[in-house]
Length: 268
View 1 (cartoon, one colour):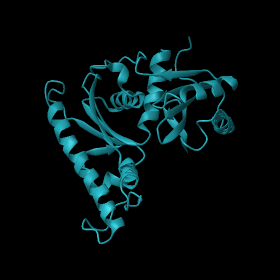
View 2 (cartoon, helix red, strand yellow):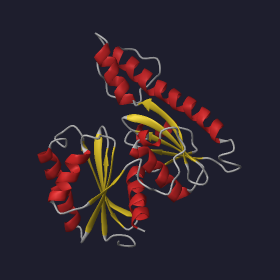
View 3 (cartoon, helix red, strand yellow):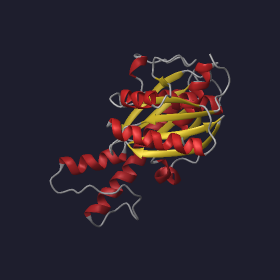
View 4 (tube, helix red, strand yellow):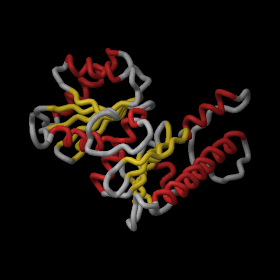
């Protein structure tokens, strides 16, 4: 078994909307790539071409030996990536809810927790300690709670605003699918403005209400007298960050950092 950090680590976060790749040298994220999940990556050829291009970029950037760690919330894509990586001579460590991460998962059915949620919890505790609440603004918006000692405590799952926008268009006869954006005003003067106002401000309202209840419950015995750190991450966070509570700390690429931490813990 190899000890210490690899010369280069390629972390792969397979999400419902995007697949995000991160090249690490030690703890430093040197470069990141993000590709839409639905544009060919599900096919073996598209996956192989994307991986070949990214590995080539890493090598051009000075990477020697490359280790690979992967987490996925799209089960059908995991074997596609494993096979493509294997054909390139790269072995992959896949992180799942069953992986030993040195973190107790204190929920009813640990195997049902998404790998991305556990990786976010692992990363935030490694980087900042606990107790903490991570809000990940992705396809779904997830709240994940971490105790002072690093235990995963559970959380909440909300539909993300992009899903809400699609659902309105899909299940109504006359409402169009609109771009999720911050509107100029809450009282819309046309259909697009009305939908954008509802999506943006309604979404903020959901976040604030769930956050208030989460922090209230976290302020019990699991947190002791320690301040609860609030961390925001995910692809849509920058849109909503200006109107989130000021206590939030924005941490880009938290899931990739979690993959790095998981890899290091497994290889010690």
